[in-house]
Image 1 (cartoon, helix red, strand yellow):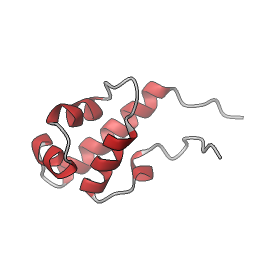
Image 2 (image 1 turned 60 degrees about the vertical axis):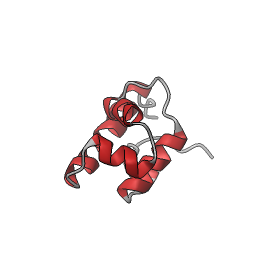
Image 3 (image 1 turned 135 degrees about the vertical axis):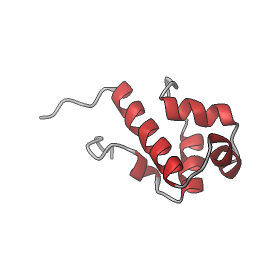
Image 4 (image 1 turned 45 degrees about the vertical axis):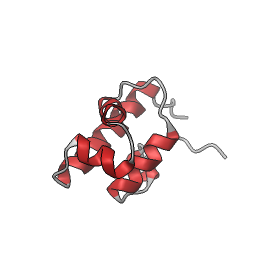
Length: 82
């Protein structure tokens, strides 16, 4: 049985996915924040993986603004809780 991925590793994966998706579109953090209706600081924290938690509301808003699903930003080997 595989060991669960450490939370810090999940945060780094999500942060990289958000940053990569934003940069691919040629957007600045301010652009993404405006489209997601968040403060730029919230986007910066998500992209830096500095949150101890991953606020679902913020993650959902960013994913929607980027035109991706939340699950597209999560590691593929993240265990599913049913």
